[in-house]
Image (cartoon, rainbow over all chains, first blue to last red; front, side):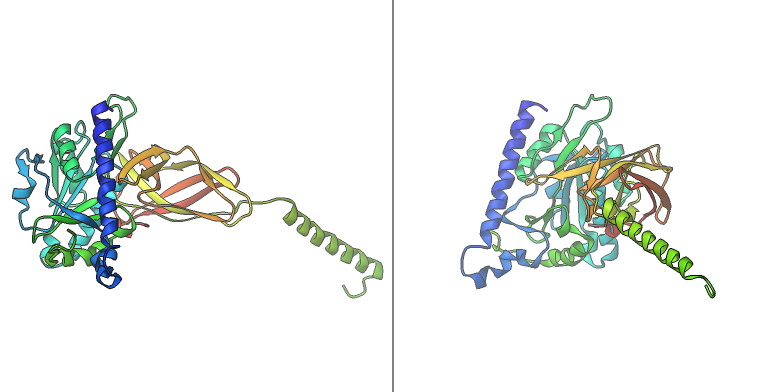
Length: 224
Length: 157
């Protein structure tokens, strides 16, 4: 890991911590009766952010080799964004698998949600590797790649920690650390108001309940 | 026993008493690890080279145990891994050599935590079952069937 990565990671972690702090404060100010909605995350399973996040400005490359600007391609559509890597055995396939199974069971517009997967392990996450990896969950899922610098930039914009990538030249393979949350961008204002940590808040039943609501939910200035 | 002498009856009673005392002594003398492995499942592998397996280990005995190794016919290598997720949401995987199973405890291997990693598994489809053997320091080898579930929503959490 280079010093730059270490620095970016520190900045990312700090920023994520600040975001969480903001979120924690949202539900505690004002009268209890008025803050009920926010303190229970507006009834959603994820964590309502202290302030909403815009889609990253980075132009990625999709698995067919075409440029992919998230803001342009997903404008006005419910969009889930997740950063992982194709050699990931646990968190990534489970996250994608749960979302894929949920979308198959849903009907209506929410069942067509965009699911974007950014491969942070640029040495191994080739477009071909990502396509094969994603197809095991869904052929509809979009795989995105970019240079490490641009991926770091996107993560910084989203206040997520930059990846930690051990020595890629190690004989026995190497371990990758990655942000494990899913960000959901609203179709109404194209902003992410909610982040889903891996685990108990992102089970199939949570997504089944939340995605149709997120499809139409008007956040307004509830999180600002 | 009709017709047996009082002496024989007394000897029989003495023998029964001794046997009972022996049982009580053996129960008091040595702690035991009583291990049950249940709920073994795996999702259809996400990559051809790796598959994660999840299960629950319960020790109802009064002796701490330790999971030493894992083997399966379905893959040339199986090992214990642990995903750790820090406060920022950063997930990172590491090896775990052995796993402590304290007395009177349940240890769950679930996504985002401990799992058994199968390297280069045979092709696995939903509904398939594989046999997996866990070797414990005290309780010895426990072999269970693991089922490949249809999708990730059927995994423990």
